[in-house]
Image (tube, rainbow, N blue to C red; front, side, top):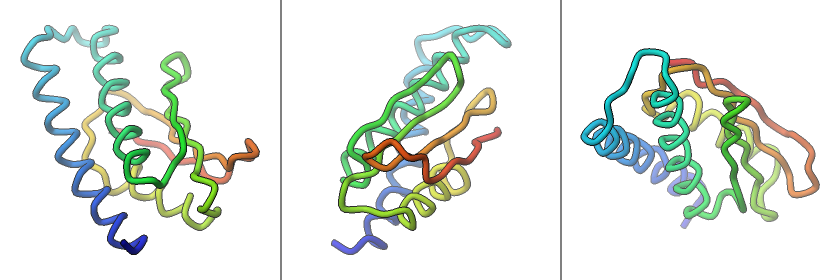
Length: 122
């Protein structure tokens, strides 16, 4: 499967995952304005995003740093910095993940060098 087709799949899947995550969280959770429940909901939605991109084989791992409001992803060894820019754009600009606060998405190479960073501000 070509990289372009994978990216299209990721965008579509991100939208479906985000909507499902939001509805599942909203059904069993009372969200207080500005409370930690909103922060947990954001982290869970981004966890779904990270898991989906990892499943697609575009990253080798991801982590949610809730204390810094960031999603950190490590690129698969076969991908380079141009792929990091595409992934960052897809996650920050194209995805329809509804968040309660600003989150930072950072992409790293396997050697630990940061190659892309963007903000999701919704």
